[in-house]
Length: 318
Image 1 (cartoon, rainbow, N blue to C red):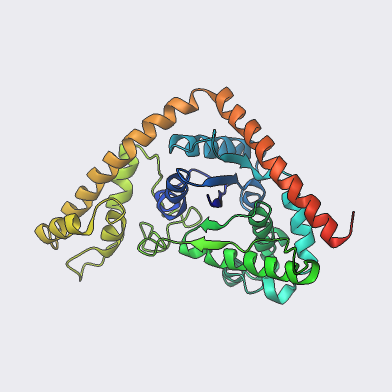
Image 2: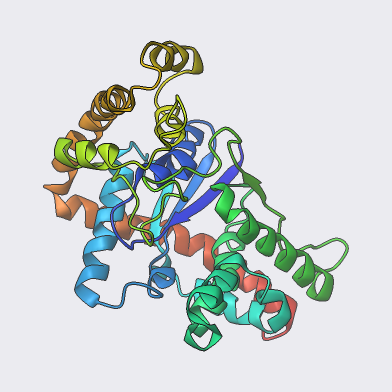
């Protein structure tokens, strides 16, 4: 049995890119493996700086996982902020990490390019080290991520290797080196404007969207009028149907963008409806949702405390 770990920021409702890029893999993997699902609320502080929104977004993220079928009896669903060892290990990693190394981060480079270096917070700059701590505390084998998160897993591996080299021994390597898991046919899910689907770009389709939102978002997908097939529509549609089925649909309505968008609308409605209905039922019992978080805190805490004891002995603070 392998250990799987991945996280999601409580910075708003998840979109279909989150689901197909990472969440679906986690739900499938839990059948045979141990899954740690982290609600990374400290990461979300880089964009969500309102207490009420943070509380609501966090509860929403837990409800979302439960609606998708996350098995909390077998696996672990918890908040990053409930486990103090995440921030503690981040600091330890900071002491062996150089500024030039962190400047290689794609998120940092993007932020500098958009608004200038003077606007980048320390939290955004140091994001990869906190993510490395999130990962390495639980000794996972595999990290399911979208293509855009590949570098963060590489940072975690680099950090694990450096820590082991400095503080480890031949017969006692503190950290396991995790591997990213990316479904190549999915990689990056496009948004309605053709860029990567992202809440920060406001180009996403909510995972639990109602019919009206689905219709509006799909009809707003940017298309190239010079082509017979609307590539952005097809890219999203390919998440829901096989290539053979889509070949027939897109051949029959070649060049008819309206008809192809309407076909995608119907398929997305069919996909989202049972998820939305299950979510509404779970959201009506917040005591159950809070109980899930308490149980997750206890389970994750035991693993994190044991690992941190090993780390502290290795660095010589105990």
